[in-house]
Length: 458
Image 1 (cartoon, rainbow, N blue to C red):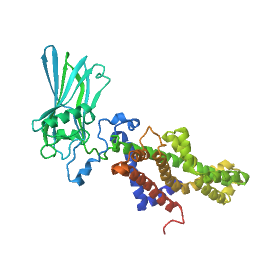
Image 2: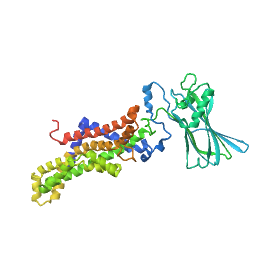
Image 3: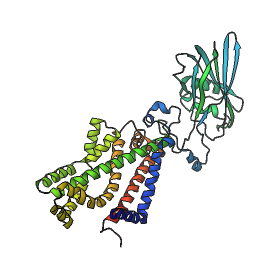
Image 4: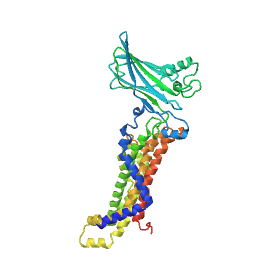
């Protein structure tokens, strides 16, 4: 009962300290994000780094809330799925038309237009993509011929218009007919289909996008949608590969907490029992064990971890175990010094007198008296583990199958985020690493202040 009273007293003292309470609140927020990750970011985390999973997203655009400070209304990401279907027949052919309607009221044109199609009951078809603008001017964007092998149940056709050579040729021809002479490659030709050709501003209003397919059968479209890639996206924007950074930051939270807590718990347990055993047994065994600690402490940890990562290509949990190997030595030295004092205390002498074994004395009498001093180390070891994993990932040596804050920073460095001014790519992951580390540091300082008499405030 006295032990539970001691625990309650420590908890009561902890809650009285504002810095510890702040750290606890910050940690609870991160834990809530980690638990709700499948809801907040409904994707398979192993697909995050796959380029094919983000074809339908704008590349390298800032978050939507940046519009509050820009003074202009950016183009938002728009997926148009609803269409009006009409069919007409002539000379044994069926003309199937999908008519989409959407409105543009932004000050900037869409970044790109992607057409997504999947159909069945098709042998061969000729498809024309056409746009009707608010000023009633229309232009053919692209024509193509498709077969059952190129457009079926298991394969979806995706056309990125602004990157399509036929589309660019059609735009140049259309502009020439409108009296505007431009050369392909000198400007972003795709923007012109949304611009007022007289003043160069975005032509706001209602647009119609038509997919017209001619075939010998009635084509059944399983999926047909028009995606207007915005110049802003989501809460955190996208990187140069089109990946939603909010999803990556959310899924990086449970990985960071798991690595930090796993390394902290394992290293604290190893350091605690290793130090207690060395300090209580003493003699030559103590000398040998401490020399092993000295050797490990003298090793350059990060270069060794880099070499091990290059050789073994570890997953995130294997990285955690590698960090643990070099994370317990300092604590074991502190624990050993405390164990040396406790083994000469009266209650240990009494336990020896009644015939208690060495293991019983260590586990029942010495370890419980040292545990309060290791709780602070338990919290303070988490930031070091998180920063070490982030360092390895930043160097491209982390687990490539999962999004972590370190891998996001690595991709930002490789993708030239700093030089291109994409601050939303590298500032948020760095800030999250700092905040989660601060939460454990605040808690560790508060606990250390409680259990360490020399730091306790009077």
